[in-house]
Length: 154
Image (cartoon, rainbow, N blue to C red; front, side):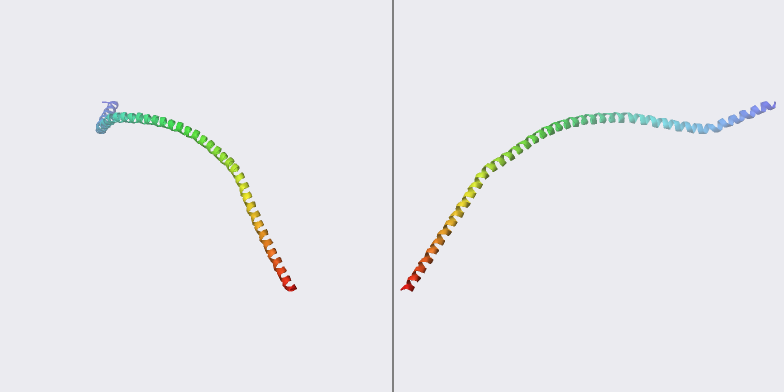
């Protein structure tokens, strides 16, 4: 046996020992890979129905969102009608306010004239009574002077 054959024999024995040493971790790794494969298969089996449920839920949400959009469109249409009615009510209110101003002016002007006339009549009547009272007082004073003057003469 030559050196080369001894070296080859040592290399073969070392390789065989390496294979024997690595066999145990490889076997353990195989069990880990098998467990991982089972877990992935379980996860896959459970995820399929879950994704189906999520898909159904998303479809239901989309349907609900479409209904909400339809409702919002209806609400916007009704708000547009309310805006129109509010504009008409504002015009009616402005017209009523103008009418009230015209009626007030038309009714107030004659009322002011009547009130002023009534005030003038009261003032004139008071002045006349005052003038009559003054005349009576003057007449009374004149009569008293005449009497006094007659008494002094007699």
